[in-house]
Length: 360
Picture (cartoon, rainbow, N blue to C red):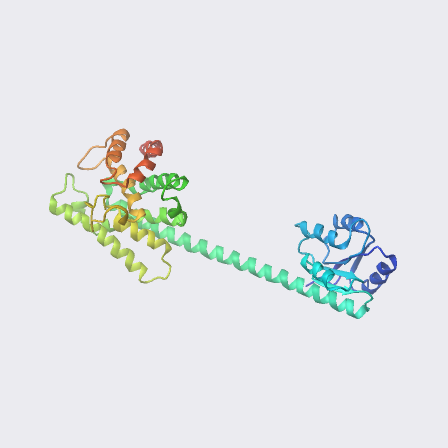
């Protein structure tokens, strides 16, 4: 409940006016008389009032100057100020409103009029506070609900990723490592590159999380092929390549049943294009150059690098230095040349990620 004894400061260098207004208000409000702007600011050092009644024509610091100082103080900026004045010209009134006054009362005035104008402004101020409270509270609720949705999304994502990792045992840890590679690459890309403006519009949390789904289609590949202890035959490799289409179908199926696509849009592009090559010799559709979405071009580097430095049933891992050489030699054929230049700046971070992963 609003405190009936709200605080009002009256500022007027005329003691008769000051006493008269104080007597009009003291029955209803806690009143603080101030005969000058200097005294006003002394009071404001200890009291934040609900409203200020401010005379304009005062020595040393007039009402307009006083108003500027009040509004410049963050603690007082929202306190409503009503000008009390004998000045009746339009320009003076407009100046008062321009400075932030909520009302303008001309002297002489009656007690009922003054009380009504004050009550109206106090009501408006309370309504503004209530609206701000409701708005802040609504924003808090939206944030909480968003966090709940994101937590659920991440929990589901983690489960799906674990399933993929469990089935594709030879590549254990691949999904987590590639996410770390992507993070290092995109952070550097955002600093100063031709693609900085493009990724500035991304929700980076969504992109990095969605990238974990890049091999989700492998769930549909048989264990015989997925975990074969040797190099795949051409027919087996053709089957392996279908994991891209399976993954795309899975993501599109989810998109058809939801209106929220910000996260899934990244996932769709990563899943569908991370095996495309800059020169058009990749799969599944043979996209070339900038026709390959940036998400896929980024994932290609992270995916290939990890495959090179990791052990597979059909190969031994190669060194970080050898992997970097292969990535750099692939600029313009397998990989986007711009991204390879960015990769060269974060090679040491990749090496550290591999070292930390091998120590676990």
